[in-house]
Image 1 (cartoon, helix red, strand yellow):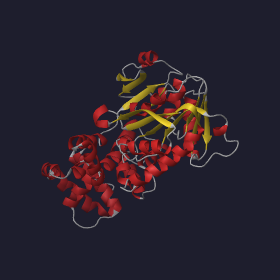
Image 2 (cartoon, one colour):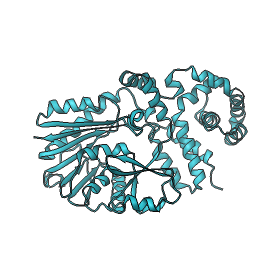
Image 3 (cartoon, helix red, strand yellow):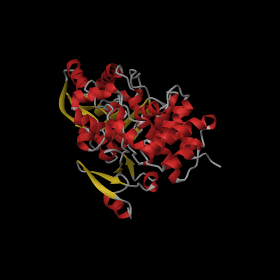
Length: 417
């Protein structure tokens, strides 16, 4: 008999506690190794991500219900049980019974804590409502303080709640293979609503048909990720560079905007990421994309494809803190430190220094992140202007979850004089 979703969730949480792998990679690996019914896959995903989203609140509840030290496995069992009781509203008897069944030697403790939580649920929720925002919405205090200073208390609370909600399904139609009208005709009973993004065919869907993904009719992609490619606006016949391209959502969208004409060079550092990039490029039929495995932080060697001709346009979608996509990368909040916001701009500027010499005179470069933080966005733009007076800032765009209903993103367009 295959392991239950609750059992697999415990394995995933124990792996995550080691701190070496992000949650999406852990879940992807488990789903590859175990064949589960769609309902079980959905429950495993909801339970694993839900525990990580609400980690601080769940640990607060555990602290009220149980004094003393707990081993990692028992704490994770209690987190999963409490998440089912307080967030999923699973009937108490089912949440308690199924969790206790996995508890082994700690069965008595887990049973006692979860039964008490069920009895006192109303009173405990009242107490949670009196806790600071960082506890009741499970975010580190330093992030809450940063966002309150930048956006205000009301927007920060809204942002934290959005980060704890499941992300919506957005599907970018791949016009290299299909039209929006064609897909609308194929949708059947699927709940499908057009989402307007500067003329791009993006569909908001309750369920995306698997064959649409397998045959490359489109790409699961939040509208915020289209901000930078739209600002760069690559044209058919141009030579374009996507310097940090994996997994390929922006790359294949730019190929679509170029109508498959010209050359789009797409780079990334790790073989695993490049393999995924190449797979997406091939599946979506982006025939004008040239995929390269290389470290963009290193100067290109003689004979490098990057030096063949200057690029008309360069997209520099840099590694960042990911604070704009926390609802999708649910454990980012627990891996970030305040020092990251000092470290990231140095790495981001190093990438800019590699990109600028590859851009032809009159060419355009877009610097972009999925961060909400000023150090990584406006701060880097100011640093670029100081260091490269030959780059003229033409426009900036930003997307904010609490304002735009999408993930967070930032992009700045420069023209090389």
